Length: 234
Figure (tube, rainbow, N blue to C red):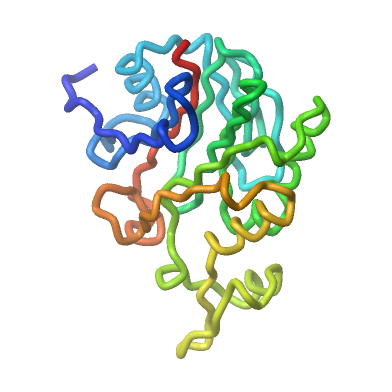
């Protein structure tokens, strides 16, 4: 592979853990449009000294499906993965949708979930907490960090979208369409599902506005992707 500039990262590790996990998201500078997304992920794995055989990858389709990660495998039609195994690294990609990093300090369970408007409308947040509840972990024990996400002022949608959300997370604009507060919807769903509001933090970065982020809404089909990773450093 051609030489490349070392990737810059958003690093959210300190907001989630005590140094035992790494929660990161690649910035725009690292993506080379000449390479496929898979090639780019492999490049990042090399930079991070992670082996492909230890990584669980979701084949994202804007579904509400979450699974327990199987290392070295692509999980079809899945938008979130969880693991209790410190040897497994989790990953996903975003370009306006929200990357949600879940961490349960008492058990070490970690999760990485891709949430766009479809996933939010179809219940992927509740599905994530149902999955962890199945192994005895209640939502109150989780910390959640929400990475860069498109903000309401930049996120114009149609009636077919807002009809799936309560009226307090969208507003009509002067073009006969609507502005959806995806972050507001996510925060609402997390707290309604039992996550302590004091255990939720956000990056405070709009993916559409920031020059450090890829944005599908801003750049269209030529947009790259930011790659998220969540893994144990122990």
